[in-house]
Length: 439
Image (tube, rainbow, N blue to C red; front, side):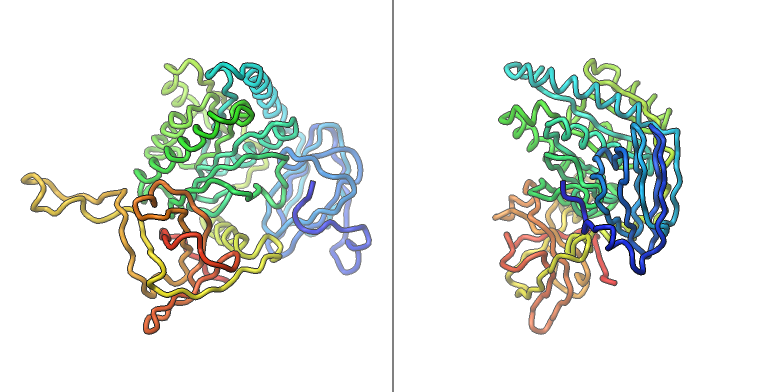
């Protein structure tokens, strides 16, 4: 399969590059790596077999990993890795939860096979719906990628659902999204972006508008349900759902909402006894739901808010310029009158005079509010809706994103950056709090 970045021959890795070193891995051990913040890392598999996030490494091919990336190379039977000696951190660990992870995969594989064999039965033909939950930095995204890649390696096409608006594994932060996974996930490039189903929440925390978050989760689930009803292959393959690390109070309520809305049948709890106990108690009436606690990987690195902000900025930059700066976004100019920008939520539901005596007007979380174009929009990332009419905006998914680079008030012109040239798919744009300043 194609890996991210260029693949290099041995000669290309020489020259003025950092010194090289070899790392020998015993069976069932892993090499945990944090790439330097200022330079990329080249490495290759010299001998044996190994995988990254569940995807096998190609033998002898040099792979390039971008700055700040954190990953682990695991081997079941032993391997030798050759790599540049310029990492932030790298070390070998022989205690990993990989055996328990692959055991979960084996159980899911059996359920997929039974679902495929029961194509005529509406209930039995549904493959596993797995939701991965746990606190921040517990390895949810990594486990999700492993389960998806292992399933794809077996010939399945599971659906990946990402409900984590804080970082965004499929598309930009501030979105929930879903996409079928047809082959093991590239450990550098990440989730493929061919026609994902994306809904724009617009913020990196659900506390801004929890009602909108619930509505979008429900909309996404209903769309996938309709797709499964006409596609037996996708239905049998099931789905893997990644969630936020927000698990207390409102976060816990939203977890329960997601489990119920997507009709999850397997809940994988990473590294927290309390959450596991709470979910087992809350879901004990659901006979077909298994709650399983798994150990989180010792290689999981805690990331502070500054690191997360940098990661969000990097995700936005990659959207427009590509992981290796290999994309050429296009700058365009539009008239104010050609665009209709909205935000969702805010404004009183009714004037105070229309409310019962003593009642206070409250904001409507689902209200579509027109946005006046002014300098406040500078550096905002706006979502381009597929909607053709205003009343379709709430239920429509997203075609893509633009970045506002200039606003000329006197001439009523707005300049924006888009991934490609040409007219926007729709004049309807959605605004949240997603900003980006190019550095």
